[in-house]
Amino acid sequence: MKRVKIPTLLFILLAFLVGCAGVPVRETVKVDLNFPIGRIEGNQFTGNRFPFKISVPPHWKMTTEFPDFLEEMGYGRPGENEKEPTELYLFNPKTHSSLQVDFTPADQYVTFSQVKIEAMTGLGAGCLVDDLEEAYGKDIKVEIGPTGPLSLKGVQFAAKKYATYTVEGVKREQGWIYAFNEPYQIFILYMIVGNEGNTDRQDIKKILDSFEVTSMK
Image 1 (cartoon, rainbow, N blue to C red):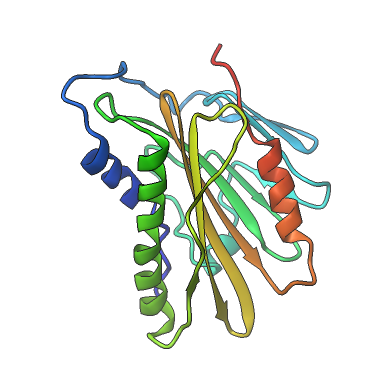
Image 2 (image 1 turned 90 degrees about the vertical axis):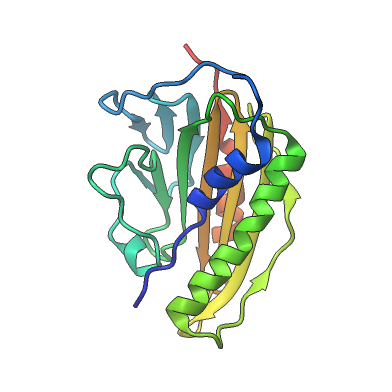
């Protein structure tokens, strides 16, 4: 089965197309991939490579290594030489609902606003639908949710969009959050697996409420 792509690269490309300035608006940010990603202490993660923190409910897990089950959910395994790997994976081991957090330095010429962030977030839906149809066939029914602003602690601009569909009788909600806080683009990808009986939706809301971009040291 073809793996479903997540439209992160589309967002990065659109940032160049929609928001480029004629002169540099920030200094180039260099990321040392040899620097520790961060530390997990109990249910909380504190970033070292990038300035953020986040926590999960007791029955969820966090890891900086790609969980094997995500491949079966359609996420591609990062390559060994990938320059900006996902910083953190959070998941419910029983239901396989999950959330991923990735920071990417913004190009020195790219400008951002809430309007641009929402526009770029909305355009990711078409890419996802195309990939779902290629993976599961043209008959798959995909319902696209609205694009809307999102409040994240310590973040200048953020927007969210999602799609729902059913695979082998199991409902999925696949969503993406695109955000910017100087000088980083932030990508948060999530998937809720299963029907209305579990608490994963509420759990993910709590996780997002705990997310905070902190001051750079």
